[in-house]
Image 1: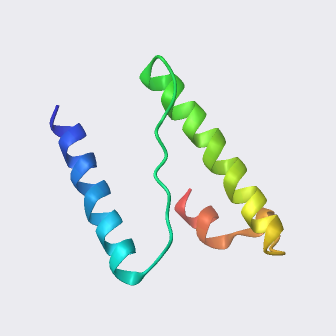
Image 2 (image 1 turned 90 degrees about the vertical axis):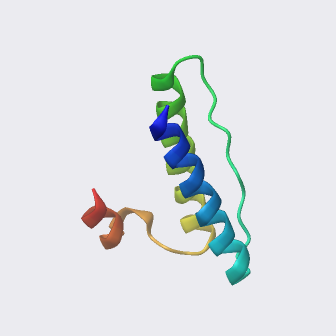
Length: 71
């Protein structure tokens, strides 16, 4: 599947850039039996992680202009 190969390459390039810049990062493996389950569970986990990271850093997670623009 060509899209899968492109995503794998995109992941490898992003990981390399983060490593080169000295950023700490973690790899998340999607969970679920179907593609839809994997996507939905990943969105939920990313939203939850973003929320708690913002709260820990004292940032209001409801008013993120960049995220609203991306949506």
